[in-house]
Amino acid sequence: MNQEQDELRSAVRALLTRHEGPKAWRPLTEQIGAAGLCVPEEYGGAGGGAVEAHVVMEELGRVLSPLPYLGSAVAAVQALLASGDGDACARLLPGIAAGTTVGALAWAEGGTWDPAAIRSTASPGPGGVWRVHGVKRNVLDGATADVLLVAARTDSGLCLFEVLADAPGVEVAASVAMDSSRPLARLGFEGAEARLVGVDGDGARVLSHVLDLACVALAAEQVGAAERCLEITVAHVRERVQFGRPLGSFQAVKHRLADAYVLVESARSAALGAAFASAEEAPRPGDLSRYAAVAKSACSEAFSTVAGEMIQLHGGIGITWEHAAHRYFKRAHGSSQLFGPPAWHRSRLARGLALG
Image (cartoon, rainbow, N blue to C red; front, side, top):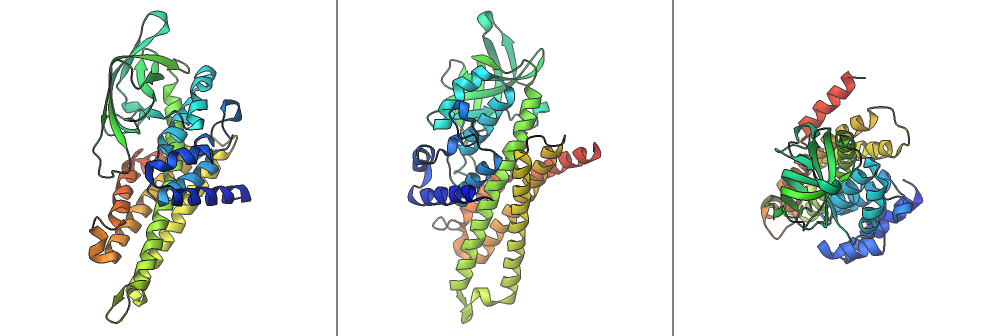
């Protein structure tokens, strides 16, 4: 990390300390410009990349932030950029970069984010208007988004479409998830009016690229949350007295904390490696997918394990509503499934290695 990235981390952490929950979105976007970090300057952004997004995501993970950063500032932005559609980028990215517009990328169907599983369809109409039909699940910030980027199939293949969230034919329902700090939604489309984004039939390439970048960003969030779990747990075992001595002085507890520390630092290395791979201008074919698969798998499992240790080492208070431990545990398991479970990403990695 360079000095600018360290200063970004300090600024984001200080802001999230002063502003909790959804109230942090406006100052985060207006004062720091976080939503536009990955947006090119020509569209009103800062022209940063995956490493800057990594810094922000780590800090958001530490506080289990419900802000629409991953869905809007990462997934939606990267989908627009990958589409190569200059008109769509010029129309949508300035608002997303300013934080005044929230974008949501809707592609998951049947419990998977694999683009090959998409069955939603789009048919052309008069005047270049398209009509989208289908159902999308687990859409990040789908219930509060202003603009939806919807993946659907045409006669040419998989495509990306722009749909206004309040357009006729769009049904929006917030999902009830185990992790209430991660807003997800179910979106239904019954002939909703849509505009093609990018080239007809190029959606599979776009979504595959966005999946990698989304996994890289999510891995950073998981590292930040896991690190915070460890910090809270270490502070607790130093203060908690058992049998006349601090809980942390017992050798068995020390071993468990040491194992958790190794997991967090190993996950950090995997996440940073993926972020720097994402920032390369001309990576070797398949490199980004391999790094993303490793990061998503390693960071998901590390966060779940460390969050579980947090529950165990806090004893009874770890499962009460008054303590944050159960919230980290829920975020760990929810984020483990988001964009595909670790086992699926390991199979992606195996296929990539087999292909060379």
